[in-house]
Image (cartoon, rainbow, N blue to C red; front, top):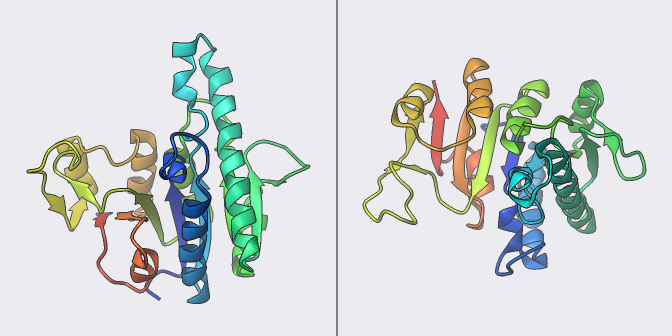
Length: 235
């Protein structure tokens, strides 16, 4: 395997599938099967998932809710998705641990770095929910920070597009895809890969990012085996 330990970042919106809201059981099962294939190859997997299919903290101000309060609501939304992924993985025989940035003892462990590393070393999938436990930080930032903390080899950002383009490929048919691109060029072109905090954290720690289509069967395994899938962002 090219990558021994990965941090898989998934969007909450992807879990809606064909629905307009919530969690599509078919998408959940498909993602779980893809993750299991990677685990069966001996890869250590950590996961961060967003909560946009349930609630986004940035919606708070529009609805009259205090931004900080809204961010905490968004953290709880990510925890719901994390619990769903945990249940789906365990249903197919994958050993997991759910760790939270917030203290909620009834459903998950509080994040402790050494404990997370131990879980990964034992072959358990570690799912990080509730962000980093502080407002004003996105799940992209959570993914970057946790990846650095658990010494992941790469951040794999699973999206509904197959990489990074010169423009939004869903809006511009002339958009061209990058097979690889440097952190500096992403800055220069103003490409929307991750929020700036998350992106800078990866850059400063020489942590590569690969943006790929998680909905295409087999892509995750191909990536961990070293095949060129999606767009690699590195120095």
